[in-house]
Image 1 (cartoon, rainbow, N blue to C red):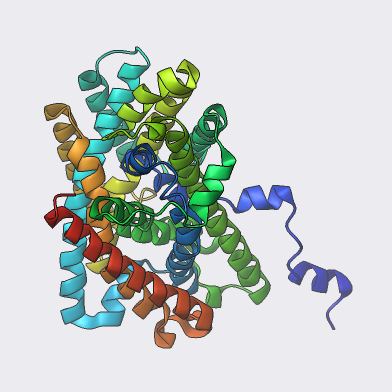
Image 2 (cartoon, rainbow, N blue to C red; image 1 turned 90 degrees about the horizontal axis):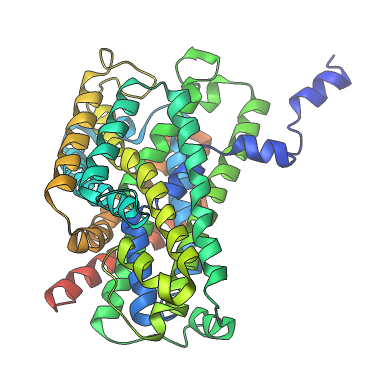
Length: 441
């Protein structure tokens, strides 16, 4: 007969603040990487051009982000496999080809995006008086390449988690900006909407950079790597059905805390950037084409400290976002083709993963060295994500809702509803993004 002590051990205890902190990992890093310089530039442009007119996008996009990333995370813990491997199981050869083509397109878009992010890191160092951006961009790219090619998963994951702290620089800038909160409330309640195509094209870009397809594969992959590092099933990730129920329940709770916290942090940063730039630059509408432009414009309006803090913010998020961009599609392609992958594997054991990773970092670094103007790349990449997001959301829904794959952890009614709403919203955002481009927005 089971003793009281054994029952207590099997009953998941309430998590205190220490347990909450221990739960943070892939979800927090995913949410933080979502606010890379491309996102910062897009949010800053929304505030600088339209004040608080687009600030409502933050609370609207939050439940959509949580729903999609929770599904991606749940597929990993329920099956012990990445989205790429699950796509191979779910769709067969014909579907595998379609998903593979989507992943190749995603890889190309990510390389362009990470090149623009490296430019932003270089420009941030230049704004801080550390030297020319042309020098710092390749230094950042090569340094990250060395870290990712030689560092263990534990080292890489710890660095990523600590880099997330730089996001709070944007919250500090918001409080330095002298915000009129009544106007912010008007924006949140849709009283400042505009009807021109440029505005809605920028809103589509905001949604696109918030619900970016590369984050789906990163979230799934990093949860798998975290599971590999735990001893339940040797060096293989243990699915929920391979561990005791009480451990599976505890892990699911920690997973949800991690994902929700990451998405809340990401959305708080989006809100802070739109509000800070709307309260300052947006009072005299200005075109902001990069995160560096926003940092420059903030100095005379909110003080040199705000400009410097803003620059530090996008340097840190750039250093966090580049590895995520470089590796996300590599994880998906490796899983889809059945090849070994992961930062906890050596290049000899996972050659395809590391070759794709290295090619992406080298090409991105070359782009950052050749070009000095990231204007079109940063916001255009957000619009491309808006166009690509809907097909990938549908892929995630068809995997997470399949009971043959997910068992008892297949999507419930709430996940299905919010998931398909998200797919519809992102399809509409993609159409608006295309419309805005053809209309000259």
